[in-house]
Length: 54
Length: 253
Image 1 (cartoon, rainbow over the protein chains, first blue to last red):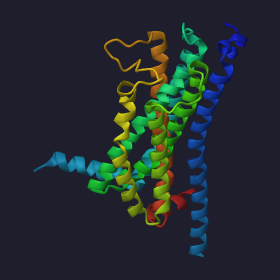
Image 2 (cartoon, chains in turn purple, green):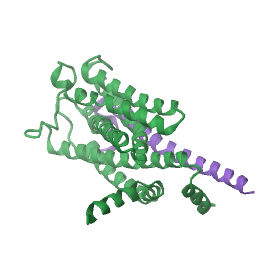
Image 3 (cartoon, rainbow over the protein chains, first blue to last red):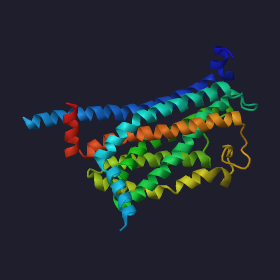
Image 4 (cartoon, rainbow over the protein chains, first blue to last red):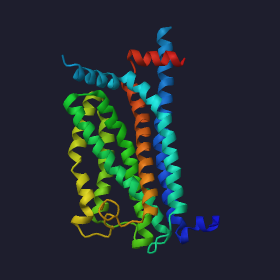
């Protein structure tokens, strides 16, 4: 099978690849968002703690 | 005299204690990520490259490899949430509350994915993006249930109370799960009937079934991974002033 027919998906390229794209976008957001928030929260708390100990 | 129950209870108290659980989550996340990616790549390769084209639906059927696992997850996660809601209400275990609320956005994500991919599959096969039939309508209601759990938790300031309210809401809403599952049998519908869960005679070829199951398994690992990530955030948020979080911050600095 060559790459071109693979991406063409028998004429259903738009539907198939949009479906896969949306799926992985949602999965990615649901992982990255809590990771970023967690990092930010730890930074905030550390700053607060430093101020309090002074 | 009763050594075993004591050991079991000790195990649960240790595992369910926030600092211990936090450390455990940190240890598990890299492994879960690795297993998730391996299963995902195997499933995608099997589904998009190796599996043959469907004789009726052409290549559009390949949406099945994300649509069906996502729909399964939308129900599976809700059932897990109801179990954790029951544990949280009966034994008031804080970790059950945390896992309940940490699961909601992931469940909402999978429900959204099931709806969108279903729509993208429906358009070329049924000729329409959406119909108000039982399966689709109740799945949409499930999405609102997940969003309801999330916004109720955010709306109540006191988090112990918020968790109790959310637990009751999640528990009541579980009636929708069997409705969704049996909807294709109870009502006449455009949505096709079950193909995989007819264990006596699954109407799907093995070369299509294996990638489907691989994808489903990879989504299970994704759920664990994402729920633990959320739980870490929620634990630190809730216990910001506790000693173990202070120690954590000190170790980081």
